[in-house]
Amino acid sequence: MTGYVGIVLDGPKMDEYMTTLQYLSKAILTPIGIRIDTQSSEPTVYYVDANGNSFTPPDGFFNNHILWGGIDRVFYNRTTGKIESGINSAGTNKSLTGEDGDVLVKTNTAKVRYRWVDDRYHEFIVSPLSIEFPGCYDHPAAVMRGGTLQTKIYHSAYESSLLIDDTGVLKLQSVAGVQPMTGGAIKKLQFTSGGTSQITVDDLVLGDTSGAYGTVIGTYLSSGSWSGGDAAGYIYIKQPYGTFVADEPIIVSGVNCATASGAATALSFNLTNAETYAANKGSGFGALNYWHLVYLILLQVIEAGTLNIPSVFGRGIVDLPTGTGFAGKETGADDIDNRLDAWGTGTGSGADGQTPIKWRYSENLYGNVNKNIIGLNVFTDGTYRLPKRDGTGALADIMPDGSYEEGTGLIPLNDDYIKSIQTETLGALAFIPKTLGGTSSTYFCDEYHGPTVGNEHSANMYGGLWKTSYAGGPFYLSNSSVAGQSTAALGAHFEYYPPA
Image 1 (cartoon, rainbow, N blue to C red):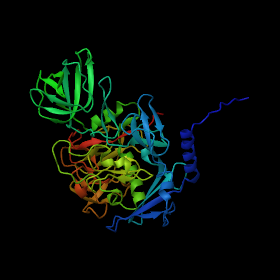
Image 2: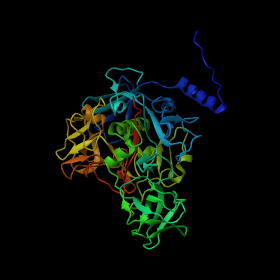
Image 3: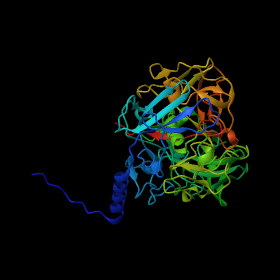
């Protein structure tokens, strides 16, 4: 006879289970799709069912559908390596500033079908994995990083920021209230012993001789201790000003805390850095891959009912001055996390174009900083490569042989707003541009920059940045710089595919 152990549930845990059961009892599992009319400049899309017939989603459809309503804010416990949920989809009992780990967004994966209909319409249909319909297949996003089908995939809820662990290893994190990691905007200052006062996060450090200064985002002790007055290691500084000089005292609030070993070194942040720093978190982590990105974009388009997504969810941070260094906004800016609807969508308190946006708990999927993206290589002859749709092969800034599929069409070589995308399945499913000549309010509404430098490129910038204006949005894509580019406006989102 099998024995069972009874579990006594406390109030919060019972509320969590009841919320889950209530959602599952009314969850919609219906396949739904859209058609894009290529003979119309209007960005509106048309809803269809699994058979391609016209369909009108009823009120509450998306909030109750498992593919949209099932998107949750969750937390990666850095100590246990486990994903933890809060008492509801928003995780309102958990900290967003790192105390409970990295803030992630959980997305259910789906089956998809693409068709080019009547030599005129792009038709995309998505369905929960449990539902079969003719011609459907697992969306490539569901099998990346190894080829194992994942029912749930995760990405950083915030733009990635820098985390320095106790051993000095650089990692990415996803938390509110910090500056996103971008190239050259964070500096590393080596120091030796000084006073016995500890330098901590958010301290303003000042070079007593040079007048250089900046705000601390982390420290690493390679030897000694603060209390013993012989601490040595590195200080990581944001918004640095001036040049530190060797042997000058480092002052915090008038107290000599350390001695600089020389000038601070700017940290680069290119696509390889993004992939490496994310992978340093553990198995299954990496920079957001291209198939993952376009899956999220497809879900946004279907929910919005238009290719002009910023007109529905907000323009994002795209209208700020150019500035110097990092001139965007920190994660969770403008009180945005207190301004969301019950499903995690909303904007910050600032003016449209100058304030962050969230779509179902994902912040700034476009705008604020351009993002590195892994898994698209383009060439100056117009050819392009995407990760193999079965998920096998290696994701890298330049994908090695055996890791990619090559499109049959050509990608544009110049710069302009996107007018159309490829019609063959590989390119269409990836929203690869085919022709240009649109505007900020017609066709795909976002700008594209072609491969014009060198012989090989990686699509290492998507979404636009704080000064892009109406050119920025989810379809914004730039291949105009060589792989390995690092700028103060280029950051990343990261992803997590749980190991098999």
